[in-house]
Length: 262
Image (cartoon, rainbow, N blue to C red):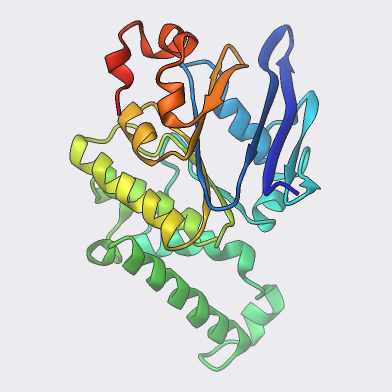
């Protein structure tokens, strides 16, 4: 049984074919990248996986169970978390509070317990302490201590991208979808993000499905790569195999092979 599998996935928007027969399999613990030009269908694929879009054909299997058509919260409860291409944080909340939002699906305190069973020794109080302890671990893991009590809106862009990663990790996912984690970053911030993503794989054992336009990052950290264009697969393979593929050079990386050199 495959850890994660997309089988012949297609989605249509009226007469537009956004995805056309996409198939691939993820092994547990690997970093798998999806690349392609703007408009190739990469984010549409992520939207199908986490339940924002409903595919027209095909299936999506997570640990042998179909997740096609499930709502985003159901997908998240199964252990699939996601970051977005555009930062989706609450600027008027601090770092700790933003990351705590990633724990909401694991919180058991309902309205009654929260309203009437309050105090440090109550169920709600003990649960709050446990969730905060987990968030503190993530803050230490991503070296966000200096930002923990600062409002997110006043923090540097690269730090905000880290916080969005932290919020996704707060769900304790088995599969993490990263939609262009390096978008808009400078060279130093990109190197830091590469470091964090590798640590997510190596230290936390989380499987990573990655969309990224920064080819240096893709070639440096990916175990395998799928290339798509116009919603269709072009090729799949290791970074060294993909960077030599003539259709990849033509469709995405340009005619100069050096563009794709790792």
